[in-house]
Length: 329
Image (cartoon, rainbow, N blue to C red; front, side, top):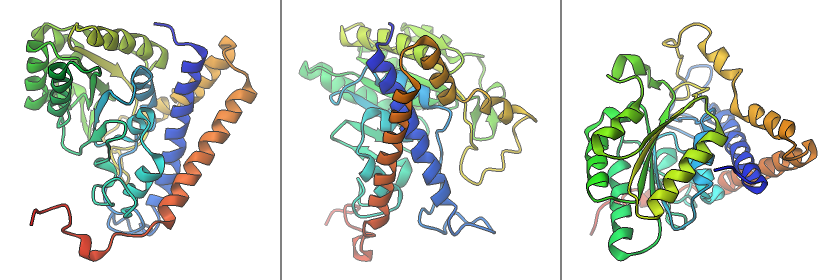
């Protein structure tokens, strides 16, 4: 599939929005955490996992989805949430632990839920695979439209939950697509040191479904392959597995010293930053002008600024709400 101009600019807009959002989150996250890093301090306490560099995966897949389709994401979810169309103000507020967030600030950035666009994520590795199958099964049993997409990392494919979900999806011919974001590192363990096969798309054959591998973090190639897999699922063709070579430009989490990376690896990846690469490709292909792209970038920054201001100005949840929605009376 070849993306139209509108689809290309949609992908670029959401990539830029995700990056600008994370740049501000990164800055605010460090407030109160220097000179001695303590993740409990500052306006955003706890862990923070940035997705910068992995934006093409989210937009290439989500360009084919609508609000009726389901996405389950990982502990590194911002790019996928934004591409799926979550409410950015509420997401920012949830990250800040504010009462106006999706879960009243209880979930934080690893547990973002927006039922309006059927988006959910979890900090538990491979946790989203089963719920994605359940959502796809519900659509199938009720004869309703909609597909499910389960995003997971390359380390998560070694979890039993992934294989159980693959088996059920294939057995019941569910409209679900498993998308593996292969950034080569499971926290600090390399793919080579943890996984018996060099590419996880080959695992699809064990379950009788198509497997695809996409190189070089290419949003156009992702759009093409994901589009065909989603079309196949919508038409009753069953599940697919897609592994995408992508790049994590930051550490596993904020504060990660990244001592496990080989010398020069991070610098080489930054040279392949997908956002300036996509901008250059759009200009080279004549898809849009520099002025059009500048306008998109300005719009994205304004949207992010508005979301951050909303989160800053929102109220923290009352202490008395600590057990609300946790235990039944």
